[in-house]
Image (cartoon, rainbow, N blue to C red; front, side, top):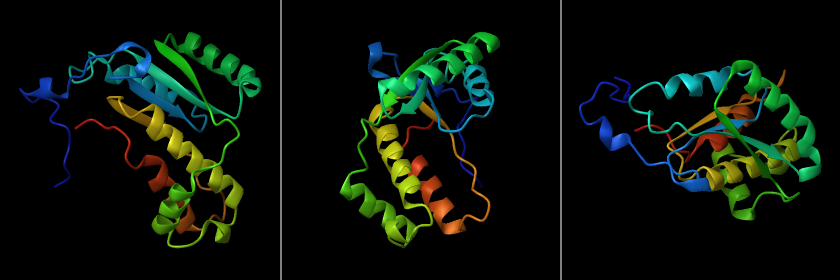
Length: 177
């Protein structure tokens, strides 16, 4: 049987964490890596109506940007979406600072993929996604739940490359227990 969250459990209080300031403790973090038309934001809104997540009223829309200069256009698009759907979301830009991933994380990713990053069809894109995974774990480590819009596979993309990337982006993220 597949393990699942005991939604009707008498001990659902053990899943409750307090929301604490701007540190993201107890938040629901939405990592918007791919435009899904707002569906992920609606899912987060619906989740907060359940008792397990009722104290997690604070939802953060995490958007990865290279720098503050690139931030204006995505901000307008997301603000319009939030207003259109009447969502209670805080938009949080997460800057890469133009930095690539740490060497130790490249090594870990290569272990997951079973091949070197340089052997990937698109090593620069994959390197950026490794950096995004680092930022996700850094900025959402105290969140109650992370929801990620994972990028779809590119036409003709090698399966192991796509699966390794998806594994990297989703590993070690907070999830309901």
